[in-house]
Image (tube, rainbow, N blue to C red; front, side, top):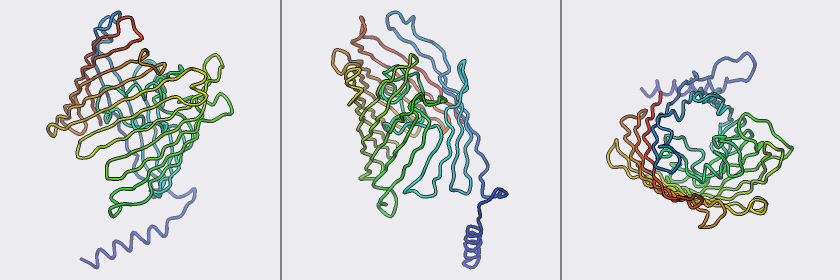
Length: 340
């Protein structure tokens, strides 16, 4: 048995040593993985003038292809197919040979906030927080359309200082250079956005981090608006228990040109059984950085995860939006998640 294992190890080592780069090489490539997911919804609201809400709707239909070449290069292409304008969501290649340093090039999530890079399946409630929607590019406070928190650019990242026999890494970093205009759009000026994060993982599963964003966005009328933001928070996800909290605020030139704005949320996810997890969330966005301009939302959400690829979600939301004449209203969301 030992002889057989030695022979296998030697064969793998020899194969690795014989690996060469060249235009005729066709080996060392994984079979592309094709998958996707569908999120359907029913939404009701008693908000004045909303006519009960949108009712039945398809929130997302996503299709993706990903794989690797030489085990060092990873790629992904992701499409969003629902609605009247199907479009490309992600396209990138990443050199990821080392945990300590990798390089990603293409179109992908901005490295701003813990929640923005998350898959909708993992957020735990029906939608991303106000913080991500208004401050990370999913319907930006400055007027940028919903870009899914994504942009085009190049990013370096890595995980340093192995802990507990490399069960986890103490330090995670990301630093990206982006166009600033969002997905599927060329740059509108010579300036680039710089976004980065430093995160500490003192114990396995607990991340404490800070994020910075300095750049600008050119709107439809040609005006250049500064985007300078800071965010800090933590996330903890171990054994299906979830805690996550973040705060983001405008700084520098953005605060000077448009006034202050900030956002804060806190999410807690509690597993009840293997197939039921309950979330509670407080979400706040202050459009002018004051209590008089706040939109607070309190929600409770049940996730019935019957299978890794099948989830049913029921969420109740209570709103207090002080910018409206009638600030108090309620929503009921029912969501279905299917993945393949």
